[in-house]
Image 1 (cartoon, protein in one colour):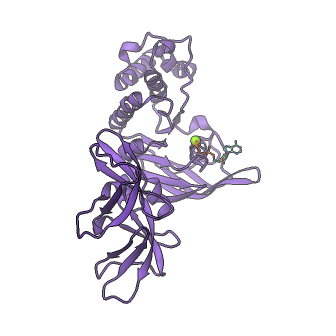
Image 2: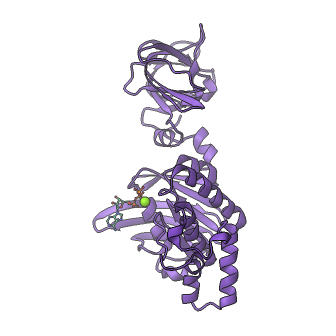
Image 3: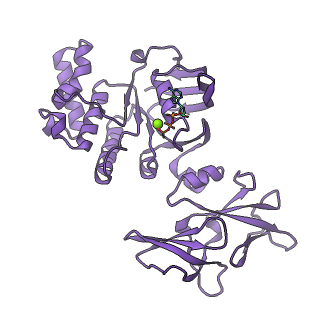
Length: 360
Ligand SMILES: Nc1ncnc2c1ncn2[C@@H]1O[C@H](COP(=O)(O)OP(=O)(O)OP(=O)(O)O)[C@@H](O)[C@H]1O
Ligand SMILES: [Mg+2]
């Protein structure tokens, strides 16, 4: 069982610093997912852990030992990339066995490891095939199998499923979930742009932004208690609606005023905190909005577009703000462009943020 500890880790390429002092503890056996916009430093972070890039300053500990200058081969880490890079002239079996053969491992031990990995990843029927006769998902499983045979203490995955089509992604995602169950002692760090992968695979998610960490938490913590506007917008699909408001002073209960097509007053409970300043942002997820009934507190607008996805429809509503309000409704109701709608929400589902973006 191996834990990872990053303390004030910085990485610069020449004069350009791309990681600005990362502090992160990853427990032994934990499955941690890195998410964040393109270019925010996720792959660089993995490459530092693997030893493929040198840390500029700070400390990396692997299993309690300082590993800043430990050669990659001595770190007990296997990395799986987006491109699976299998040897085309070798069978699946030989692709998985190759690294072990080179390291001089005895044949029976190699055979046992390859068969165990193949079994774990449902690859046993394909051991004699060549990669070109496999689907993309099967090839990626071979690449994962190759990592498994090395019996690493830590697995690093850099967007391993992003080259696969939708159905294969789902199937291979399940294989990865199974792999995690089969290897509970292995520590896994997994980079993805896919919300479903992040939410379903992670014990904890780390949200990166521009070379620093915005928040670390379980998937549900990030969904229910985003620490700031960045995380609020980043976790969830479609993204949380963010609506500016003015604090209404003077009444006996705190209230928010949303100006738009209509002026909407959102009253809060006596104990609810509002913002320190006179303005802030109200966050409400598309799935927490619904069509209002007469008498409900409501936001009013005109339909811009309805996206029918089969089991649900995303309606984009112009409520007189910069961004349209997105409402996720079950089924295939599809109001026409221009149709007027009133939507409402329950107070317990709102998120409040200070004008500077921190959660209240
Ligand atoms: N070898 C390098 N030399 C110079 N700059 C680099 C190098 N590798 C990465 N960078 C820069 O470091 C930043 C972080 O890159 P990184 O590949 O870690 O991003 P990422 O979060 O993995 O993005 P993506 O989601 O697109 O894969 C980017 O601005 C990138 O241009
Ligand atoms: Mg990357």
